Image (cartoon, rainbow, N blue to C red; front, side, top):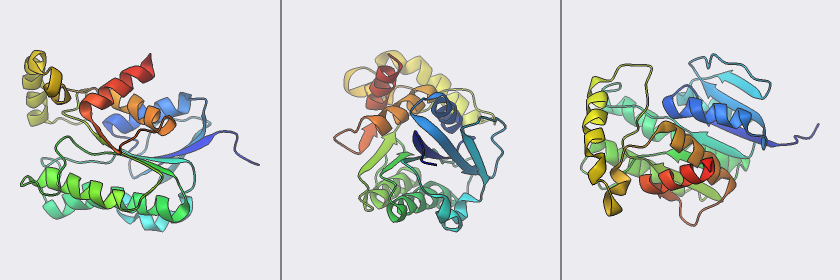
Length: 225
């Protein structure tokens, strides 16, 4: 039987943005199927939801499942959570790049991935350099619709305790009034806004693949209006 709506694949569906995104896709009438992949149980059920328990470090083993209209990649870690640089790169670079390659191989036209503000393959900062290298590698697949979302510090309540991140959010919160004009891209952005912007981008193509934080904010607000 032919699908009546679109099919989305979400990697990182149990994360802060990924869970919100998945819930929104399940409520979106344009999507008839949402496939999520990962090792952690999503813990929610829906007739449109298909959950595959998978090691995302071995995505190639699940190539047969990569079919549909769009892949959303919400995978990411932190230095505190993954101090080993090799393991860090395997997550923040390896998983998104492999996913983009599977999209290319299987004819999935749209790939959206959460990167970071400051991503630059030439950066002296390891985190920014890895994100920049990931962006460059993903773009080399030349998919019809690729969007690299570059959020600033992401707000919201996380399931795990990250003291350093909480402190950064608190400090950045106090500085919000000065982040105007060219500095607007440094404002804290909410995970719900990122999720809304991702769905918006999947439906309404943009002229450029890199979407900085202030643009994510605008698109997310437009999607909600």
